[in-house]
Amino acid sequence: MLGDAAIVEAALALPANVHALAALNGYGHRMGKRQLEQWQAAVDRAKGLSEAQLPQPGQPVAGPPPPRAWADKDPVAAARLSAARAGVSALAEELNMPQENLITPDTVRRVCWEPPAVVDAESVAAALAGHGARQWQVEQVTPVLVEALSAKEA
Image (tube, rainbow, N blue to C red; front, side, top):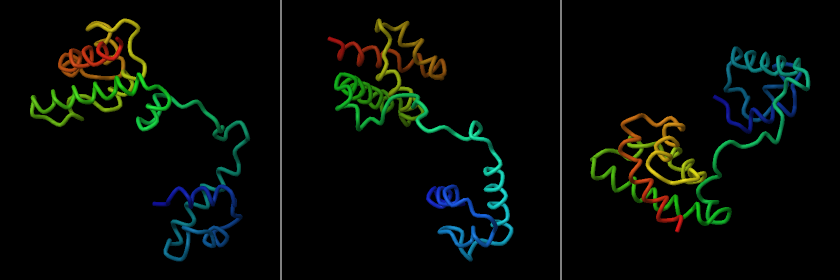
């Protein structure tokens, strides 16, 4: 495996051959000849791509920001998330199961970042299902999230 820094270095340097590739950080003498040849083949394929085929910078980020940024970006959403996390944690403890099995943290974040316009059992259940929650998860978590989202709306 290569670290991100080594891959970026190869992308910036675009080495012409395996000897030039081996001289880059992360590709040194510990990497076998076969591996160097595979990575050089990848560099060569990338060099053959047109500008339109390359990944474009500045692609929009899907989903909510990292939770640590919520307090600055949207304090109300941060409060919703805090209440939801506490409720899900308590429910998971009551059910004697890991909270990640009860509902994925990503699903909770997404529903808390962009809650339904009207917070009720039906809309929250639909939001959970829309984010891939299973039916049993929806049934267990919906009441907890309705309470958490409603408490922070007022």
